[in-house]
Length: 173
Image 1 (cartoon, rainbow, N blue to C red):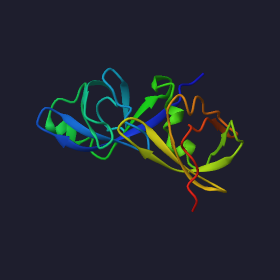
Image 2 (image 1 turned 135 degrees about the horizontal axis):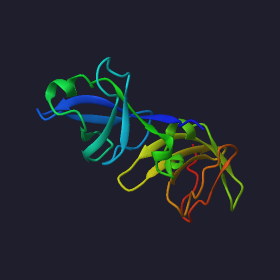
Image 3 (image 1 turned 180 degrees about the vertical axis):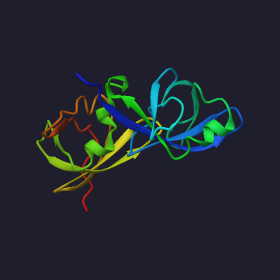
């Protein structure tokens, strides 16, 4: 079976003279760039390798990460990467990515297992500790923290079952 790949970051700009670059997550993803990860730069340059290993990665991930890639050791090489994207094998992505992938989540239905109430994920907010799903339903809006006690699994299709914590309720519009 062929490997499947996923675009995870865009090279925003260079940093310093040692070939480091700043990457930003794409399509609402959290930062997935980490030390040791093998990435492909696309579109590829005409000369040189498109494959690199992340040698170091620093930063908060939400606003950008400072990244050093193997084979990129000077400012000229780093400048050639600006505006390009980093791809990774899907098998190298975290198992819980489905909980944070805005492209797969926005528009999905969630159902409270206790009450049966349903709503649709309208937006995903990124917080310092966890993401928050903004869910809109018949009774209004619900801000749902994405933690294991609330959301344990995201199936490929159908409603996402959640356990709304005591004290959280639908805000009337």
